[in-house]
Image 1: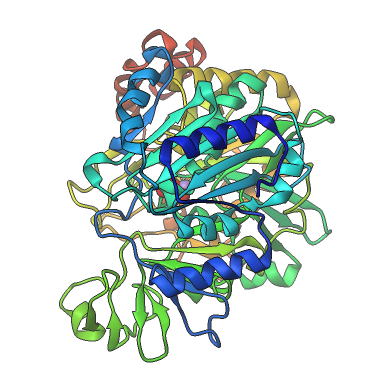
Image 2: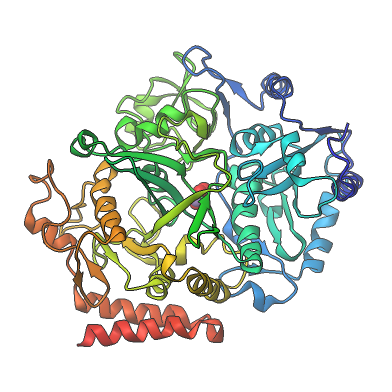
Length: 596
Ligand code: OXD
Ligand code: MN
């Protein structure tokens, strides 16, 4: 039975049913009984494996096909009418051509299967910043994940109302999980997403990257708000005041870790606390008081498991202890729990590796094999997180004081610096880049540009996106958040990281907050404002971060920066006249300051 009278929803679901021809259509109301029944069904078919319910209550395990373990950027498309509107950083195809190509693939694809109709809200129910999506899918795995990652079920239709047409239509079929026929397609002008031949999270949980970033960034441009690949955290100061910060880092640069940071002892003693509002996506809009407010459109964390342990991210690990879905990690067969590289130093002897083969985990890993896939994931409810913000469900969102950009840079970029103003900050965001690490295949130290960490997620022309940033800055005026850049990954001559990172990043947040409050001075340099000597608190880590190390962390090497300017000129070329003049001006000004 359908859960809504909304004729727009009913008509679209009818069309999708006629196209995919499922045996059965099930509307997902989100009730506990329905979820439990779907879990039981998925366990009975082997799609999900029930883990140890004493140690990991409510937790399930899922394995994807080895050809289907990550987002597929080369098969991800932005289909708008004019190619020019998608820009040089997106794959493009004409929407009609794309639909003509995909329609036969969807025709009858759900024969013998059930189609689940999932209504969901991105953002707290009742929030003026929230938006509704409906995803149809033939995968129970998708339903169970969406139940964690979004506010799913009848409540979303209540938010939509009986007449609105403002919902994102998501069509997903795992089809044959054929990598040659895999397509992740956004139609921003139609509010629609078509995904086929994948069953991996980022490709099929359509509320996340496809909607909350690609479609939403386009909506944000048209409606005057921002959808960003940013974590949101709150720092509670000893006086009880909470300052909110958002941060954009490319994938796998530690957003989840920063979002759930545990302050060092000294800070804890003084009464500092960090709250998580979000670990991946922020939707931001100007509030009535003129400030920028952020919500996390998601309701859970889809985090990378390897490397997560009680030291690197205690709060993330705690979040996965119940009602969590683990995908492509290893199973410890002794007690039917999970394991991944970096959880501890004890790979289980009696293990099942992520592809499903039973192995001796100790020997297997000693021989250089990985028990868990490097992109294996946990899907954990946000409410499990010990440091989840009390404002998590606040429909108004939280006021943002600072925006941070960052990437993995061995040399050029100092530990932290502040932009001169919003326009310069937008330049800094456009220049976000990361160097490839030894862990990835290919050359080490190759610079990959990832503007605002949005390269794979911006649903329209990157030049127009920067213009939108500049417009937002004008609207916000002196109420705009201050913009910073950080680099936790600076190295010495021998390739060792020289900043401890993790909880100690609190020391940098501390400086950032003081800069926002105007209570600490800074050195004006060619690239921006840098901390004065002694202004980054190193109490408790003086042995590691000596004054010499701090000098290195905060060094601005003009030769390296001049090379950076050359890099940026090259990078900017592809955007042609869509590159806002204000940004090429910033680059000219940076060069002038470096040459002074
Ligand atoms: C993610 C990503 O999965 O950014 O969050 O790749
Ligand atoms: Mn991400």
